[in-house]
Image 1 (tube, rainbow, N blue to C red):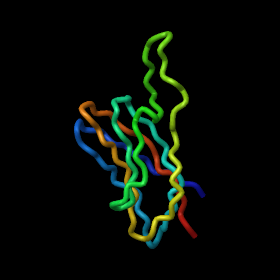
Image 2 (image 1 turned 135 degrees about the vertical axis):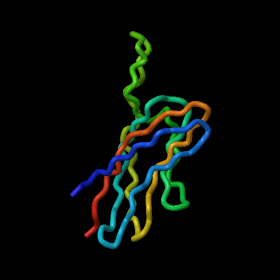
Image 3 (image 1 turned 90 degrees about the vertical axis):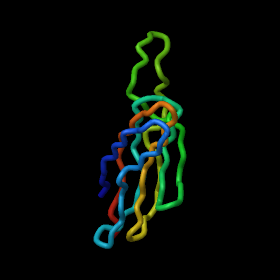
Image 4 (image 1 turned 180 degrees about the horizontal axis):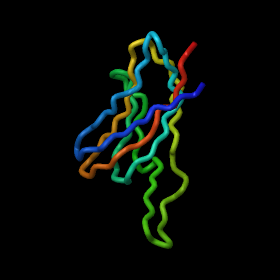
Length: 120
C-alpha cells in the first residue's frame, strides 16, 4: 500500500529550514518512493533531500512546480516543472529522511508529501 505524509516548510531568508522528516522504525520500516513538491515562489532558493548527514538531492526552486499565476496574458509560468522527485530508497531502522528548504535573501515556502510504503 502506498502511503503519504505531509511536508510543510516555512522558509526563512538566508537560512536552511528542515522538516521533521520521515523515520523508519522497527515496527514500520519504510521505503521512500518519491516526494511530491510545490514551492510558493521562485526566489532562487534550493530544495534539498537528506538521509542523516548525506545530501541526496539539491534542486533549484525554479525547477519545481508553483501555483502562482504571474497575472500577465503573455507571461505565464511554464507548466513543465517538477512536481514529483523520485527517491526510491529503503530507510534502515532509525534512519530519517528530511527535506530542507535553503533560502537566499528572499524566503519562500514548501509544501509537499513523502510518498512511501511500509516494507514487509
